[in-house]
Structure formats: C-alpha cells, structure tokens
Image (tube, rainbow, N blue to C red; front, side, top):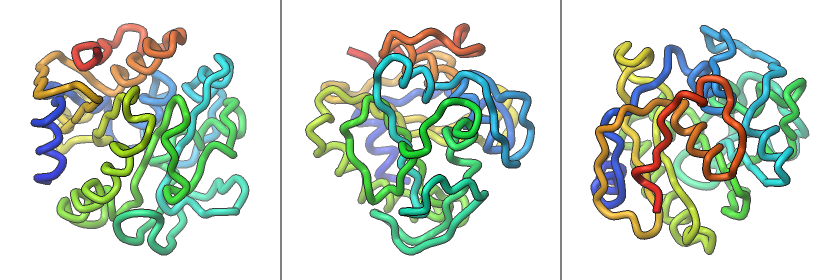
Length: 236
C-alpha cells in the first residue's frame, strides 16, 4: 500500500501497535467502549455499556460514524450487512455491521442512530469522526491495492477540509495475522497538520485510540482505556 505507507513516512507511524484480539468485532468494541464486552465473535449485539458516543453526547460534543454502503434513508439499519453501489469513493461493496461499533450501542447504549451515515455524506465538522470503508475498499474482500486506491481518493478530501487544521487522523486496521498483543501487529498511521516524519516504537493498541480521544476531549476513561498509553507523541 504505497500511498498509505507514504503518508506514514510523511506524517507519523506507530510501529508497535497491536490489535486487542480476534476476530474483527471485539476490536471495534474495544475502540468504542474500552472493552471487548466479552464478545468473541462477529455476531450481532445490542450493548448497554458506556461508550464514546454517549461520552461525547453527555459532554455536549458531536460525533459521526461514516460507514461506507450503509443504506441511505433507511432509518436505523440494524441488519448485519448491506450491499450497494459506489458510496462516495473507491468501488462498490458491502457495509458490515461488525465494522460499525456505534451500531452496537444504539438500542441500549445511548448512541444516536442518526449520527451513523453513508460515506458520501462525509463532512469534517463533527468533533469525533469514525470512518469505515466497505468490505472491498478495506481489503477484506478485495486487494490491498484496492484499499490503497480508496485511501488515495478519500483522504485528500479530509486534508482539504477546513477542519484539517485542528484534526488528528488515525488510519489503522482491526486485526493482524498473528496473536501478538492479542490480535496481531497492525499498521497504524497518524497524521495532523504540522506533524512530520515521527516514528514511535511506544507500545500501543486499540485502547490507546480510545484513551487519546478521551484525553483530547476531557472525557473520563472507559475500562481498559484507563491503563492504555495514549498517542501523545503524535500530538502538538
């Protein structure tokens, strides 16, 4: 993925970043709630635990989850998947609920389903934004080249947004191919305006992302995020 690795060299690279576990879903739950919530599969769950959606809302802050190929105009789509045409950037593919962590907290966890939108609706105006490509553009069903092409098309939109001047961008993956750190090593690029060529070998994992968000917005820590090491070396 030359485009992504080029951004890692240009901005920042966390070289010692591990996923928490296998398979996909519990890693997404870890990022969004500071815990895997005891989930060990990619099933459908409606959880009541505290989470970043509720934390942000309670603090009067905004959040959005832009989920590629999430069905537009469908209200709160709680199905496990949905396939559609090209949604914004890249190629057509399938939305997967297992890659949409706020959805697990919409029924009982306080997350507002209206804040989950198709990627074509992308705007950088919210305080916290979580973007998931479809199953082709994230290299789950298609090639790494397809995923890199998606990033090459989409990320310039982020960089050109007026909010880029005060944005921290993290591009990562849900799980690796080994059990290192619980879920394997994963490539993680960090970017912001003014960051240049920073490489860090500090141990990090998905809980580090949670903790970084909480620290940036002055939120309380959630479960395992309380002991996580935030990505402070990439901050101003």
